[in-house]
Every structure is written in structure tokens, then in C-alpha cells.
Image 1 (cartoon, rainbow, N blue to C red):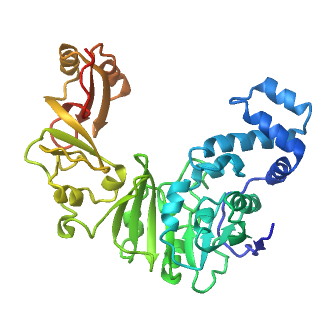
Image 2 (cartoon, one colour):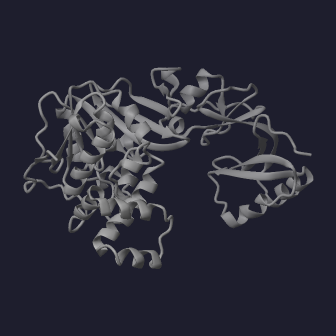
Image 3 (cartoon, rainbow, N blue to C red):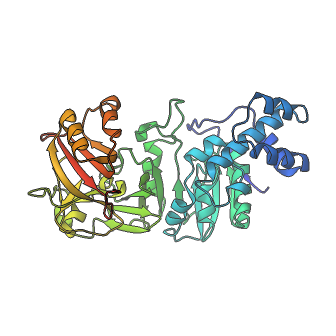
Amino acid sequence: MTSYENDARRSTQVRRVRGADGSDAEFDLLTTEDGLALLAEVQTVKSPGPADVTRWRKRHAPEVVAAALRLAEARRKGAVKYSRSDRMWLDPVGVEQATAEIVAEHKARRFQADVVVDLCSGIGGDAVALAARSNVLAVDRDRGMARRVAWNADAYDRGGRVLPCQSTAEAFPIPAGAWVHIDPDRRTSGKGRAVAAEGYVPGPEFLHQLIRTAPAGAIKLGPASDFAGFVANLPCEVEIISLDGEAKEATVWFGAAATASRRATKLPEAVTWTDRMGEPSANDFPAVAPAVGRWLYDPDPALSRSGLLDSFARAHGLGRIAADLPYLTADVFLATPWLEAFEVLEVHPLDLKKLRRQIDASSLGPVQVKHKTTDLKPEALRPLLRPKGDAPAVLFLTGGAGPGRAFVTRRPGITPTR
């Protein structure tokens, strides 16, 4: 494997690095006949138990068995993210933070550079996607990750365009003219993922310096981060990306890569909405409907988290059911990938006991419950989920600044089974 190593001793970056490099045992596992045979056997056992481990250790060294268990688990996790996970060299922690293939490909299409530096590359989810169009310097302090990114680039037939570089992000010399992608480490505290950018490694100081010095690029932040505060007074674009209805990341585009201020993107449909669409002057003011209409709409999280919900609502003749709630409403049915539509059957005050009696009286069932800005506990909602009727329904329970309400709805085309 060809790679570049940089002296990181002067860097203040303290990225978590695994102890003795377990990638040696994993490499032997992937490159020997006995190792591949063991891995194939381990992958056939969904939940290995002590008896399985004892059996494998009779034929293989403990560190090799441990490597097989790690890789098998990582490939199972990676199957939901990568089309070639069965050929990739993954690790359980790396695959959790790695960018899903479809998201990485979406971002990579916006890079217009011959050379891209992918800082904190991890297992290479973004680096491999970027290599479809550019030569990539994949930078990570962890030697094992540098080996994995090279392997995974080969798995996608892009090994000739990815050069692994072992270095900290702060110490790596970025070539002139190169665009930059960085996925800061959010697991350095050992207490789960950091939400605030101050908990990222590298932190805001380095990331802001990157925005000022690199010609263009993207910074991957968590979707729950304070991305608005992070880019305050900076000429950047924040893109909230969702996949299958779940917000995955807030991508901060800077330099020549920025084309708007705010953007929502929904995958796999590949639809987008920006602050340059709709009514830009009214983006920041909630569009509240005068009354709840025949239809209630639950928006995709990319649309609501991006701050573009009201712009989209006005452009499509919709309004919020309340200023502090993300649900939209209208009398007309709107077919769009951005919204999940529900037909409103009844609206009641939020009284769970009365609501349960009404559910029984209307023979509703099964019932799905969605609730926003309420302090309802799961045990309070549980009785609502056991109706014996034959008319499927969805309950929207809302609190917030106004009086609590319960919306009894059904999905389009759903009719009682009786």
C-alpha cells in the first residue's frame, strides 16, 4: 500500500486512536486463505456465543478470532450504508460515523477539483465517493484507518485515485488549489457523539481557519449541531441532508462550493429546496394557517431543520398548525416527497382518557402515535396503542404554546378492513 506519513508531533489535535493496532490481525485475516475461511464461517453466525468463540480459538489465535468478530460485525452494520460492504474493510466504530454511500455520492458531485483532501477520512466513505471524479488525499492519524481506506478504494475500483496519508488534520500540508472535505471526530470524549462543534476534533478554530484559507470544500457536522452558530457571519451554505426520512448531517459548504445560504436535500429522491426558492423575504416568519384543513402534513426533517419550512409552505399554499410546531395543513392534497400526508378525521382537546374512549367508539385500530412538544411518557401512551378496531389511524398529539390537541388522521387510501 502506498501512503504518505506526516510528523504530527506539533499538532494540538488529540484524536482518539485505538491501542495496539488491531488492523494487523485484520489484514492477515483478509489476505490469507485460512483467514478468509474463518471470516466466512463467522459471518454465517448472526450472534456468536461463547461456544462459537471457543470452537474458533481451537483453530486460530485469539487475536485473529477477535479480528474476525470485529470485521463480521462491522460488515453487518455497513450493509445498510454500502453496496459493497461484503468486500470492504470496516470496523464497528468507524462504520457508525462514516458517511453512507448515497450521501457521500451526493456530496461528491458538488466537488469541482482535480485534487481533494479528505481530512479525518476514517474508513473512507467520503474519500471513495470523491475518487469517482477527483484524485483524493485521504488523511487520518490512525494507521489502521489509512490501511482501510486504501482497501475500500480498491473495493470500488478507485484505488488508483486515492492516496492514504497518515497525519493529523492540523499538520497536513494542503496542496495549493485543492478542495477540502473534513469529517471532524465527534467521539473523542468517550461519552457518545459530541453535539456542539466545540466538542469536535479538530475544533471550531481550525475549521474556521480552513474556511478562510482553502479555495472551497465542505465540513461535515452532526444534524443536531448548532450549525447556524457555527457559520454566523461567514459566507457559507448549510445543507441539511436526510436519507429515508432521517436527518444524517449538516454539511457546511464554503468558498466556490457554496451556492446558497441554506439548503435542504432529501435522499434517495434527490430533491432539494433552498433559500433562493419560494419567498426569500418571508423565510424567517412562520406561516400559520387560520384553521386546520382537511390534510395534515408531516415534513421531512431536512426541510424543518434547515429553517426552510415556512418558505416551502408559502410557496405551496400551506400553513403551520401552530407557530411552534412543524406540522403543516391545507384543505387541498399535495403530493410531494417533502411531506407525508394524513387526512384529518377529527380534532379533540388533548385528554388521553377521553381520547381512548373515542378510539373505542370509532373502532380505530391499529393506532400509531406521533407527538410533539408534549411531556407525555411512554406509559401514558401505551393504552392508546392497544385498540381492537379495524380502522387504521395515526394520532398526532401536540402541546407547545397553545392548548394541547389530538388530531385523529389516516393515511391516504386507508379504509377500514370490515
